[in-house]
Image (cartoon, rainbow, N blue to C red; front, side):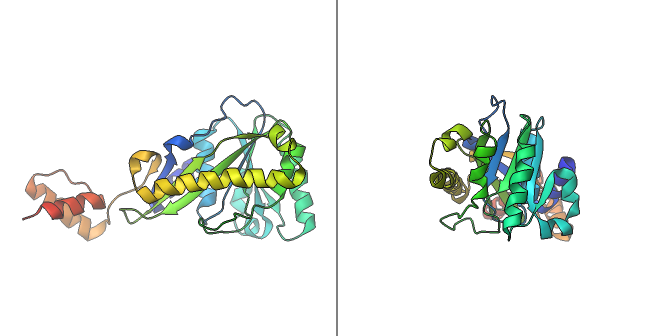
Amino acid sequence: MVAYFDRFLRRHLNAVRLARWGVPRCAEHSGPIVVYCNHPAWWDAATVILLAGRLFPARECYAPFDAKALARYAVFRRMGAFAVDLETARGAAQFLAASRGILSRPHRMMWITAQGRFVDVRARPLGLRPGVARLAEIAPDALFLPLALEYAFWEERGAEACAAFGTPIPAADLLALPRPERLGRLEGALTATLDRLSADVIAREPARFAPLVSGAKGIGGIYDGWRRLKALRAGRRFDPAHHSARDAESEAP
């Protein structure tokens, strides 16, 4: 499925980019890991699956999924998704019970869109669901890893999916706080990661990112065929990227 979503993202996005400062710093952690992220778009599931497969290939990954959505996208069950009713107390109990079993093994990971609904990346406060903070009590040996996600259009017709992992938080650090303050600590770490990632996205400098996936450039069809022929007649190598077309046009007499 990672290979499938790799091809899917290449077809539909321009690139999936990981901020160079935002590489996950948890390679030496021997216990379970909880990755919690914001939830800006429909693309999050595909992006998270790619990140999990590329960056954590040795770990067994799971994710809570809205029960109604999982009924429509049942294929995600085969990739570790488990159903949670987001609207009831029974759903919260389901989430905690499933999480207890998952996080009982050291090589496992949970990926949680902790806002529980689609929220614009600029919205503050983030409004994380309280269940993510309860996981420290269930798995005191876990590491909590904030993940910021943002999508933007730069030079190409396809969007850029940008990601960055923040500073890991040991569950022991959360357990040392009063319960009401734990969620604030998690939300503060994710907010800081989002703000830093947004600054890189606004700068539109690809060098700030490591590309994990690069999609097809250009428009395709007749127009790119004409551009290819024009480059051949001029003795230039054809580059379908939009910036190269713009540069060529600006250099024309």
